[in-house]
Amino acid sequence: MSDSHDIHHVHQAVRRYLIVFGALLVGTLLTVWASYVHFIHFHIGGAEINTNVVVALFIASVKAFLVAGYFMHLISERKMIYGILTATGFFFVGLMFLTIWAMHDYPMLTIK
Amino acid sequence: MNTACPATPRILLRKTNLDKPLWEKLFMDIPYIVKPREDTGLYNAKVGIWLFLASEVMLFGALFSSYILLRVGAAAGTWPHGLLNVALGTINTLVLICSSVTVVMSWASLKLGNFGRYRIYQSITLLCALTFLGIKSVEYHDKFNHYEVIQTDGRIVDGHLVERTKDFDLAKKTGAVTLLGHFVEKTEAGAHEATAKHAEHSNITIPVAQIKKMENYGPWHSTYLAIYFTLTGLHALHVFAGAAVIFVIWGPLAGLWKTDPARYTNRIEISGLFWHFVDLVWIFLFPVLYLL
Image (cartoon, rainbow over all chains, first blue to last red; front, top):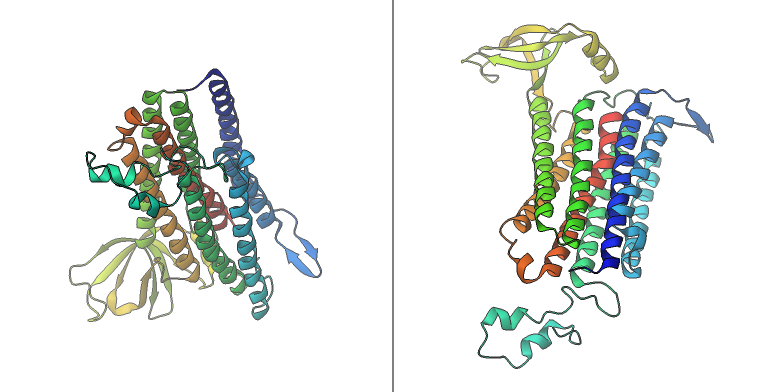
């Protein structure tokens, strides 16, 4: 069903999948380890930032990039898919900003 | 296959060929089920699944923003930590990652024309899905079996249900309940967890007459558990649905591989995209609910 070029391409993809698999396993263990480390909290404009939350979300974002980029082939996808996702991202970010604006109704940054 | 006629109504209006069965007349010429469209470079199902996933992003996005609002709005020190089993959460994360790999490997196997290997990989995917749901149900069972009892003297007992007497009735104030747990010194969440970790657990029998309030750790117990059950419950439904689709393609619809292997491979790609999305959602759910 496939010519030699396609077969070579698939074999290359399989190697990438295995590398990403290893990276995801390491990322998961790193996430758990980082949750037990008490990172120093820092302040931005008088507000205390929980570094553990930042680290955990950063590792999760890297893992999500690996899954979306390589397993879902977003690294090399067509323009239309990027268009759909750009529109989705716009509304998703808007949704999160709604939450941030709503925080003005609550005591700010009560996460300890 | 007609690639110049993208509109389904035109197909339906086309002059029918009476020597073919009706379903064939209606569906055989649906364009772009395998071949990509000239303008998008994609076959239709791929556009469809990405549009669906876009709506899914907004669905989970709304719930994540609810989580943020609830957590940031909670009074300092009241948001529970350490209520969930991190070991089980970690295992479930690894299980989902394994399943994501087996899905892409199964797709690659079909691309290489190896149907047998595809089936093995997807069997592992299905096993992973069952394992994930099994572990999740163990976690849910643990929460529904975990009680907090406030006694009339103000003391609080926290523990897992061991047994209820046959005449146990909260409304009639009869009977007794036994929990495997400990007495909690304070009602605040922070102090509660600290004492829970170091407390010695033993069987504590409480007569119903001494119970002011008795509640398990279901979604009604706190806003944290409400959003936990909502997020993980919805996610578990997605795992179940994804596994069902993968199973149907793996088993009952496997005959398509012999008649139209390219279309069959595309189905694996589409179901795989959904499965990876489910994995992707869990990648964020795990730290947010279990670790932070």
